[in-house]
Length: 134
Image 1 (cartoon, rainbow, N blue to C red):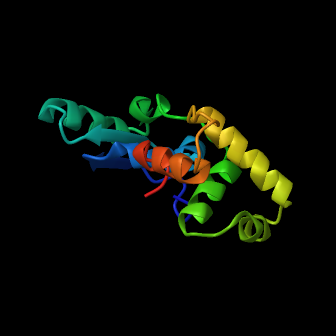
Image 2 (cartoon, rainbow, N blue to C red):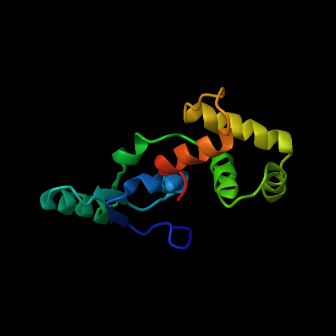
Image 3 (tube, rainbow, N blue to C red):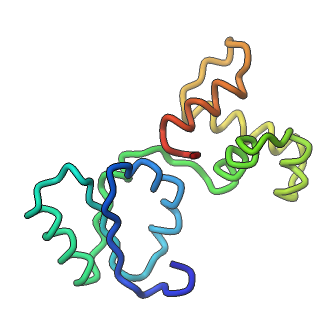
């Protein structure tokens, strides 16, 4: 999408949840962008393909998803690779306090109960279940 911002795209998949990770890029994409779940009827898939060809954007399935700022998503992705907060802050070029703030915001969005032990593991597992990380 970065190389060809005007290209019309359609994603046809049985796992559309992972597109939540690209929501900001999709919203900024200038060409048509549609998504179709493999469980849809063939007529609906063809209709969505035609929308993409015409330059229309139809992504209502992922719009129901969670809203995360890019830096929150980056925090999750780096933590999923096993990085501690100090290394995440260095990667994102922010303070460790900012990273802790990002964790709090992500936990709010994912509705994580902060009384639990292993908040980091619980948060990463919930994010994975929601398609925010692989």
